[in-house]
Image (tube, rainbow, N blue to C red):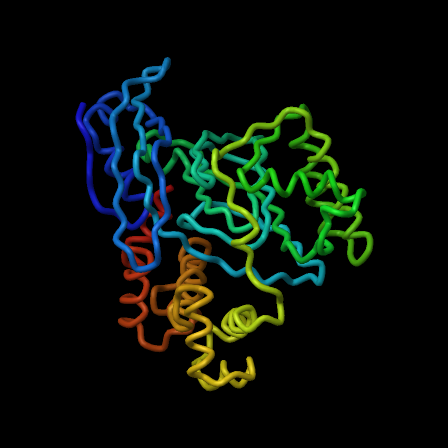
Length: 359
């Protein structure tokens, strides 16, 4: 069938191209992806993807091998509202691009079906599936409703438990009582699927209970969830490459984290470099150099990503106009907001909202 070569900035663009291939449209089948050679973009690099048609599976679905999967990764910074650095996150729709965050993530798929990209691996997901994703492992959840918008499929949904590595003691691998959890965390850097019977319903209930308790009781519930996952005997690894602890974000009081905290707390306001530097207690020029060295981004690029991510949520989950979304996301000039949005998301706010509403 030959090869399809093109440039892209998002996996959605790849899937749109694949969806439009004649054999996919003609048969109304769902494309099946197999990973080949993969790599991750350096910030500022041009993304390319090579997809090779690779026959059909047993159900007649067209198979494609992703030979080079160079996709930009949105780096998210999650602010927890609990001192335990552990949050339960509801996802009525999966709208984020490929992204990563310092938090470990336990995902329960509560609706729909689709493809889960974790690290260098990809596999199917459906309602009732359970996955754990390690710290700073790039991942993406893409629902079949987006792959096949004319088939009337249910949009995907899920509930996630996200927790920061600093919730655990240092050198936990040297503490016998923590060894099972340490092993689970190490394994999660590859991405894990869990298959024990009744585990989904049990974890769904435990996630809900976690929100009803505080302080020590909350920590006990949290570690009981991890213990239950440690006891699961039927698991599967999602990626053949582990993303190790060298990717972890620095400690809370480290300047980069303090910059992120300030940006998240004030992104709706007008922010100056002097204000950030005063907050971090560093020279502005020195702070810029240090931040760029540690993150490979400048401070205001990160601010734009935070604002646009917030805008994406408003477009997906509210009835606000484009102008209202711009103001709520820290932009006083709507054309500038649209320009920034298109630069980061690779489509206009109107196009993004239309795409989400069509799911």
